Amino acid sequence: MSNSSLINLVQDLASGKVTIVDLTATLEPASPTLKLPEEFGWGKSWPFSIEEISRYDERGPFWYWNNFKCGEHTGTHFDAPVHWVTGQDHNDNCTDNMPVENFVGPACVIDASAESAADPDFLMSIDFIKQWEEKHGMIEAGSWVLYRSDWSKIITSDKYLNMQADGSHTPGWEPDAVVFLAEQRNILGVGVETVGTDAGQAAVQDPMFPCHNIMHGANKCGLAGLKNLDKLPAKGAILIAPPLKIKGGSGSPTRVLALVTS
View 1 (spheres, rainbow, N blue to C red):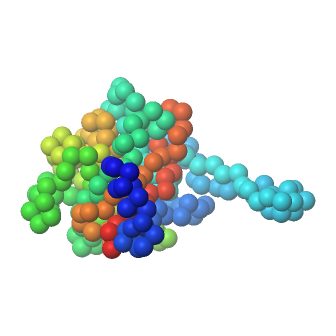
View 2 (view 1 turned 30 degrees about the horizontal axis):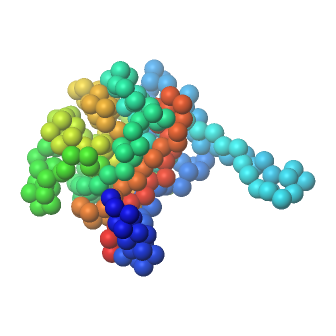
View 3 (view 1 turned 180 degrees about the vertical axis):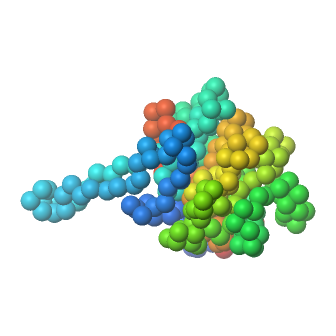
């Protein structure tokens, strides 16, 4: 991008020709966290908590600040390839050493909100993706593919995790669709509105947790807990999603933004 292009971008932002859409859910103690069987470490990842240190008082008269703690994969968050066993041997696979170019890219938003509303266990297939491509054009290499389910609209409800006797029931991916996106479309990664990048019933899919297994095995990334995907066009937005630069980090809470032309 030339210097004039950068100046034009700043001017377009100032004039409103380009707007910024916040795709991030507010991180708070009520933020839902993934529920997994005990053997997967459920209960060991801290939910978000915050503790006030001082607020212009006897503890610190001129400043307000807090301590907070949470697991890396809490709220709207980034999954690095090292997060899954299949991605452990890639070079530069952690949040601190990944190429920063991987944090910015064009967004392709595939709308499966109607299907997800009709069936909480809806799985996006290759055919579904190809039907989207027939209408909007091929998914370009280096894109983020965002799965619009409108699931974020119920984030404050028990229906968000949709826990039943056999576990969570939320939308996800057919394994072949993940292979297709990673290998044939060579995307940067996928983003979803659900608590994790896989379906609620991903533990019984083959392979287990296919999005994590296949996407990270292909040295790709993930974004979970997104919102406002209904405010993005099918194509044309630019996604900005840098994680915290944690040494050896497998992921982190992330402020995800999209640039959209008006």
